[in-house]
Amino acid sequence: MKRSQKFLVIFLVLTAVFSAVTAAVSAFELERVRKNTNSAVVQILENVKEKYPEVSERELAGILNGKSEKTQTESSLKKYGIDLESDWAVYKNDNLGLIIIIANAVLCAVSCLALTAVFLKYCKNQKAESERLAGYLRKINSRNYDLELKANSEDEMSQLQSEIYKTTVMLREQADNSQKDKENLKQSLSDISHQLKTPLTSIMVMLDDIIEDENMPDDIRRDFLNDIRHSSNGISFLVQSILTLSKLDANSIVLKSKTENVKNILDECVKNTAVLAEIKGVETSVECDDSLTLDCDFKWICETITNIVKNCIEHTDEGGFVNLKAEKTSLCTKITVTDNGCGIDKEDLPHIFERFYKGRNSDENSVGIGLALAKTIVEKSGGSICADSKQGKGTKFTITIFGAKTSGMKEKIIDGLNTPLPECISED
View 1: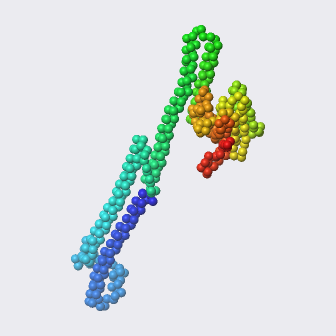
View 2: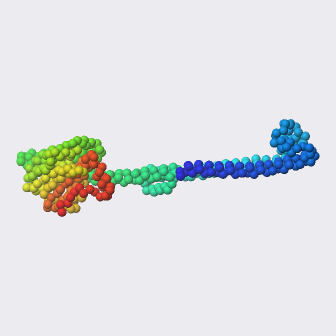
View 3: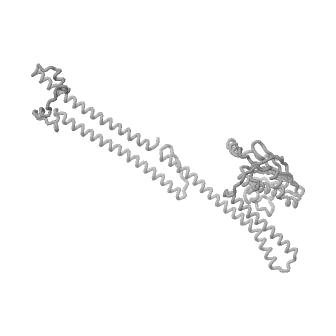
């Protein structure tokens, strides 16, 4: 029961108890008044009957019950020295009336004191609870989140205490996440600085050579300029990728989902990497039903698959292949990109989608951001991505995208099984 309700119940119970006690005392004393009065009346009636036997009992009863003609009672009693304005007809009742008045006054005073004590106790408890909760809030304001608030009751203060505990847990998590974000930002800035430092240093060195050596042969000058252009393109790609990831993280990029033809998407990705595939001597192919469709953002899903295909081509030797395949199930659409390249080391495989991570087989010009960008876009599209690889045999990337009607089904399945969906099938 809530604390205010408890206080109200106690208040009402005490009021009822004191009212009952007051009524009982009054009834007891009035009974004594009745007995004294009846005793005096009986004595009067006996004397009257003795002196005036001709007066009937009916007449006497009528007089006692007010059924006889009215008489001037006050003037009659004054003859006997009784003033009705200040005296009792029976002197014993005078003391009893005073006792009743005093008893009722004492009981009322006791009841008021008791109720006041209960109210002050309630106020004191409320103040103590308020001070305790205010202390917790002061600790929270000073960024001390190591609090344990456990409420066993359901009164207002306990509910407030429970809400403060929830807020504390939330703030603690935010503080932890903020600290992690700071560490991640520090690491990211370090990685970005490292990624930019090498090509910028190379550009500066080559530019100094070109400027200082006026007689540099044209073929060497041309090679330097090509290297500068290549390094500049790498820096441009890195900056654009970082900006894109930042916008995706900040939800400033809205993916516009439309029904798109999947084969057109795969063909576009092959077209985007055609030059690289030709240079590397790698064959690319597409396996997809012409009628297969997918609800997605054409631009960003192409960006995702293009990054994956580019990664596969870069890690596949001349004469190898990269195959793009799409199939639709009742639950999702799966797009796989498979190559027969060098594969990914088992220790690197769990980290390949981390930002700025470079595995053992990474190209020296790789910045480790393409796969991280692909993963972010896929997850923003309501899907998932994973990779399965075996060194010396190749790698298989699997993109699973759930439709609008089944986007929540994945989470329900995961919650029910408490395990991730088997989106990747091992080649072992």
